[in-house]
Image (tube, rainbow, N blue to C red; front, side, top):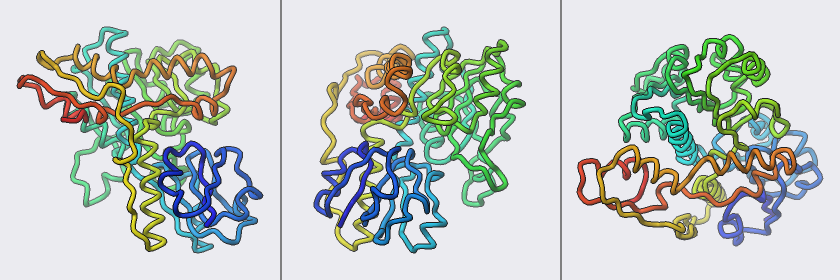
Length: 372
């Protein structure tokens, strides 16, 4: 079996090596000739899987994307060929939520903002938005959620607000899929009109898809004096982003919010499990057996948990300023894809065990995701 996989999928050899011959590829360089003999195709978000890519292939048995989003996959075409397809919903949701929390910690320190007094508008209440809401709840930070699709579902009993209400919050965090059709399209969800209504006191975070914000309108508004604080992990037109917009972002990064080792590897594991099911063979490998120990894997806290400890704990595991620095240093010389390909190891909160001395708030770190 010929298994073609994105070279940036961690533990691909460990998970799939026994199932066939592995052929790693650079995700944005894949073409029809390269996958002509593929039986299994495993991609990430930068590879578009469509009729053009698969025109020469007659042997494909399985396609998987190790990502939450599926807008790069022509599922209609795959169905027409009876090719099974699977994605990895929720694989990096924790990673993205921790990116947002790290950004908020940095911003609260930079501008002397009381993090616990903020109200957060979460736009998109799927896996990622839900994980973020759980971390905010652990800290007692107020939030509202906007998701018109889930609001119409009888199985979702959460309270949802309108987009305008979410956009009126102190922090706006975007976690929607990219859609251009249907009743609730998200392409340019924040257009010039919506962006004009934002204030200098607000923080706007985009860690989902660049096209959810009209980047040209955003740049023009910033050039005309818009003071809203921007945290941008995703950009319209990646990898050919609107470079002048970078200087207006408080924190800028190369679509790596979900790039924790656990987040990326979870996607690999989910595809492995799906392929094993497709092949009707047992899935006898697990991510927990492959993850290395974190460089700092345990911490003992000897004082009441507060904002200072939160700042120290979060930045000890992941300080988003590192990625902002890498991005600004390399984007003009190395390029967007190089930054993603050479992304340094990053762990999630769960890689660190936190113990406390029976303080009143000792459960907060564990509700945030730190291990007991």
